[in-house]
Length: 246
Figure (spheres, rainbow, N blue to C red):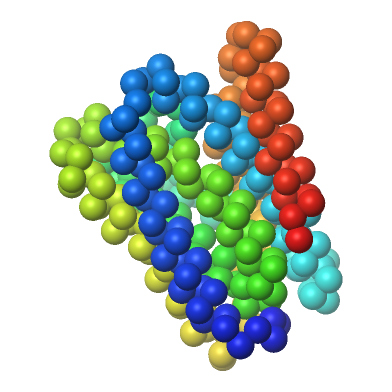
């Protein structure tokens, strides 16, 4: 457990900052589809590396160093992986980071519900990392934020494609993002009466699923070797940045 007396401030600040990333989606108004494609896919590759690196280099080692049982730790990693797989299966929603909106059906409210649940669970998990250790929380937040940037651009494109106005799409996307803060506050409250160490390996499973199942498939289908090389370089940069972080 972290000895930092300002844990609540870290959780609130990180929650507000993560929620405000929703406004990044408004940048979609500034770019054409082709330009977005050039920007988005390298960002997706970078975020995939950051998520997987965060899980492998920070979250799982921190869980083991905290003295938790090895078998139990990896059970919760599997749990985090499985929960997000189930979320996609039963809500028929997934992260799609391509600039073209054909990769998602315009089920706008369903997408917002899925994002809200994703953000809420993410808020629980990231707050758990701050409660264990602030530096671990910062690393986990950075990895999650790297993923949110391209996701918000993609989500905004889907909402607009579904017929929403720019103002309505921006407001509802932000409201959906606020569930991250709600999850963080609940985790903080629960920490006073319950052991919440399991949120750390749970977050690792979350990161591994999103990085490996959602993001990597979006970037490994290009036919040009030069583009694939760029995506690989961005992926490696995200992973090794998390390796050297903290």
